[in-house]
Structures are given as C-alpha cells and as structure tokens.
Image 1: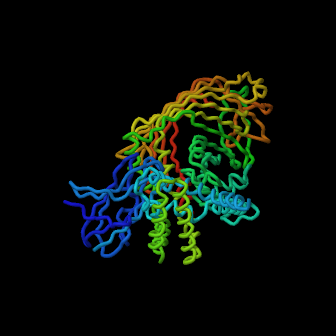
Image 2 (image 1 turned 60 degrees about the vertical axis):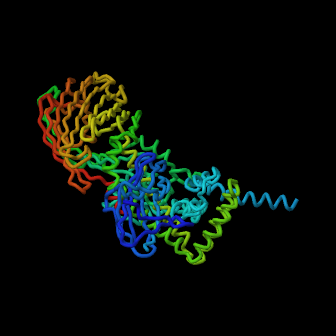
Image 3 (image 1 turned 180 degrees about the horizontal axis):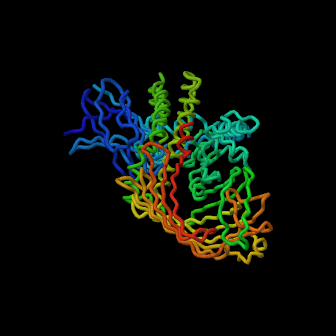
Amino acid sequence: MPCVLTPIAGSLDFQGPTGQQVTLVTADHVGSVLIAKAGYGAQQLVPAGQAVSSIQLTIAAGMTSLKVVCVFTASMQGVGELRESAPPDSQFIRDLNGDEPFQLIRINGV
Amino acid sequence: MRKSILLLLLALSASPAYAQIETCTSFKREIDNLVAGQNRALNLLAVEQNTRCFALFAADVDRLNRAAFENLVKKFESSRTDKQSGGGAGAAGSTSVVAQGPAAKVLSVAAEYGAITQAVNGQVLTVAGNVAGLPAALVRHDIFPYCADGANTDGFCVSKSLLSILRRASFSVSFDASHENQVTAAASNTATTQPATFTFAANKSDISAIGARIELWNSRDATSKGFVEKWKAKVGESMNTASEDLFEDAGNFADEIIGLAGYKAWREKHLALVLKAEKDRAKIIAALTNALRELVAMAQKEDAAFRDHAETALEAYNRFFLAEDELIDSLAKSNVISFEFTNSRPAGQPATSSLRLVADIPLSAQTKFVANGGVTLYDDPGAIATTGATRVRDAQVGVELDQALGKYAVAGPAVLSLAGYYQHQNSAAVLNVDPGNPVPGISFTGLPASAKTIFATPGDIFLGQAKLTLSPPGSAVKIPASITFSNRTELIDKPTWRGQIGITYDFDSLFAGLK
C-alpha cells in the first residue's frame, strides 16, 4: 500500500486525500522516542497517561495541524524521526530531536 | 574613526543575539547543516519545527533572567513568616512545625514548593528532602528556568548537571514532638527492687536527629533493554501533565506565529536572504537574527502579549525537560552504594552518631535486595565513662529482600518484604534518669531514688521481619503492615513479638497538584 501524504513544495507541510487514514510511527536513532501527546484538529490521538510509537489519523478537509509531543529516553540528546507507515511502503515526515519535543505538522486534505 | 566606533558598537550590540541563537540547539543544528551545504534553509525558518528556539528568541533570554531574579525575590518575600499569605498551620505546604523549627525560612520555602517530605513516626516528626528538591521545585513553579541544554547558561537558571549532582545527596531533620506520656517498663539493670515511677515531659520542637546521605557509587544504566522497558512502562503516566502543558502552551505559541497575517510573506522574504548567505556562518546567523527580530516586531504589533505567550511556552518546556530528566534519573539508577550519617540526640540518652553503608541492588523489575552495615558511636565518651561503656556503642548489619506481588514493579501496589537484622551491642545502652528532663514515653519501676544513670546489659540482638506494603492504585498512600520478632531489645533482655500497621503519604503528589 503506497503512502498517502505528499510534501507541499516550499514548505514543511503535507497534503493527502480527505478521509484517507494515515499511520505515523516513530523510528529510533539515539535512544528511544515515543509520542506522549498528539492532536489532529480537535481529536486527541494518544490516550491520557500513555505514550505510543504509532498514531493513526483520518485526513480532514482543508489545512489542519497535527501537533505532537515526543518523549525521549536520551532526554535532549535523543534523536529519532516520524515516518508515515504503509507497509511495505514508508516515508520520512519529520526529524524528532530531544531538544524540540513539540512538533507541528500541517496536513492539507484535498 | 567615527565609522570604526559605529562598527564596534554594532558588533557589541549584535553579539549577545548571535550568542543567543547559537546556544539554542535546534537553530545551531540547522545552521551547521547549512554550513555543511545541506538544503535546510526552510527548516531553519520553520517555527513548527523549532518552536522552542523561536520562543527563546521572542521571550528574550536577558529579559527572562531579570524576570527570574525578580520573581525569586518576590516569592521568597511572600514566604516570610510575618507576611504569610499561604495556608496556616495544618494547611498543605505550610505546616506549623516546619515554620517553627530551626532554619525555618529555608525549610518553609522548601515545604511551600514541595521540595521536602514530612513524616511522623511515633512522636518524632521528620522532615526529609533531596538536596536537588528545592531548585527542582523552583523550576516546577516557573521561578527559575531550567537550562537543560545550556540555552540559558549566561544567566539565571538551574542546570541539568548541577541537579544531577545534587540528587545524590539528601538530608533529614527530626523533631521530637512528644507530649507528656507515661509508659511503665521494668528497668533491666537495677540495684534495688523499690519501685520508682516518673512522669516525663519533653520539649516540643527539639531536634532529636539530623541525617545526611550521599550516593558514593551509582551504576547508572540509561541505555539497556531493561531500562527502556521500565521507561516505556512509566513514561506515559509520568510525563502526562508536562506533555499536556507543552502541547497546549507550545501549540498556542506556534499557532499564533503561523496565524500571523504576514507570516507566509515573512518566510518567503527571509528564506531568500538565508539562501543568499550560502555557507557563511556569520551571514546565516545575521540573516536569521534579522528575520526573527522582524517576526517578533510583527507579532507584537498584532498582540502586545506575544512575548508573554513565548515565556509561557518556555515555562512549559522547562517543566517538561525537568520531568523527563527526573524520570530518566529515577529509572537509570541500578546498583547504588550510599553513605549515611545520622546524629541522634534523643531525650534522656547520650548523643550518638551512626555511620552506615547502604547497598541497593535491584535484581529485577520485581525484586530488590538491600544490605546495610554500620556502627553507632557515643559522641562524648566522657559523658558515659562512669557506666563503663566504650565509645563504640554497637555495630549492625541488615538485609532486606523486596518482592513485588503480581505483575507490578517493586514500587507498585503490593510489595512483600523479608528482612533480617543483627546488632552487636558492644557497649551498654545508656539512659540518663532525670525527672526534670526524662526519657519520653518511658517510666521505670525498681530504680533507687538516687539513680541518675541506668544501662542495659550488652548483648547480641537478632531481629526478623515480614512486611506487606499495600499501595492503592492511583493513590499516594502506602499502608505497611509488619510482624517482627526479636530475641531481645536494647533495654529488655527477653524475646518480643510485635505487630505494626501504618500509613504513609507521599507529599510530592500533593504538592504537584497545587501548582
């Protein structure tokens, strides 16, 4: 199954077909990284009190922000990345660094 | 000449901003990438990727440092006992015992910010804390910034490495808060059978013991599979509040910038200028500095409270990084060897000092082994010379095995502990009999009226204990219930069985909820 998000040129934003489900996963480079909080629009993607390595969202119409807060075993020295997972396909979405645990990714549903 | 002076002034005024940008790791990383020839100009100017660095620049580190100092003075001023604005005696974070005790100002500030714990054991009230507790509490309450990556090292902040060192040391102060009480006990070593009963009264707020403990060796493990498993099991719950705050505050700050009417045009304009700097580090930093200044001016024009929002976001980052480091530090401790010193001044007994080595060895997530060995010395051999006692009062060794029940870890809801203890009573336990300053809670039968000092028979004490500690899920309460057998006590040369049930409360959770 191919990945559904495509980068929007001249920005760090992505776009994809409205209504399509997307799975995002963390990949570890230095230490382990998990997502402690994620919100897409008004929808919370991680249950309170949990930290997960995978989140799923359904692309909403128009430009909507995905906000994530990541936690790292290596604290500020931790490094990982956020990837879209669509086995066997996979693509890079965003670098995750321990010193910038909050990331905002805008997804335009078309 | 005038041109040279102007250039010098420009260089001087620009240098702090340059330094500020380079000390923020995310900016530095992207600048390094650009200098290395990577096409990352867009990433450098992306608030959605470098939110913390944008907030640091917007809030202005110098301004934050001044604010931190003013805030600290203000908070300490509000902690003055003659201007108490918090809860009175018995209220959380403001216990009357702490306020009345020695060094009350420091301890009351520590209590106010949740840096110390308090426990009552029998008639002794103990305040205990980690040396890192107060600075960490000040960070949690947004009084000091947390300079985890050195972004604030030119100013007022609590550094990660300092906290890491301070966490190795802890202290305790015990106050003898006993009231008048009377218990009858037979003296074990008397020269007469004539009964003599005393009623004792001890002074409240007397310091009965002070203690210090320092970790000598800690085989830190923050990388093994076992550590990662423990971290994954705990991180969601431990970081929940800090993550929520960061999600909210950093999200609002980023949203505010992205939502600026001129944001897209600003990014396009300055993207071109950063690209024009090519691989020249100084030019890239200058271009970024100008871009950020323009952005802050634009944002402040739309919202006068923009800098305050940046500051709020930074406070959330501080709390997040502190919580993250505290969790890692607590889980990374593997085998720990500590040295403990306790100076005890019990009423009616000679002062003693105890020196003890403590080995804490986790065998698995569910099992822990602890071993102690120590000696207790009389502080003033002259004071006990008439009893024939020697300086070395006793030597002790103890071992304990803690086993979590069910799937839980040792810190979890139910723990079964088995302990053994041996004490060689090298020198007699000495009690000073003084009706004007009696041993609290004890009265003696069979002492001659002229007796001033009594001492028990030296000997070996063997003690075994089984304990079950229950921790209701989601609660800071622990309920230990134990049964203990000993062949004798220090005073009474007879076997004893004793059953105990108690309740303890972790005040950290209470203070965390008061933020």
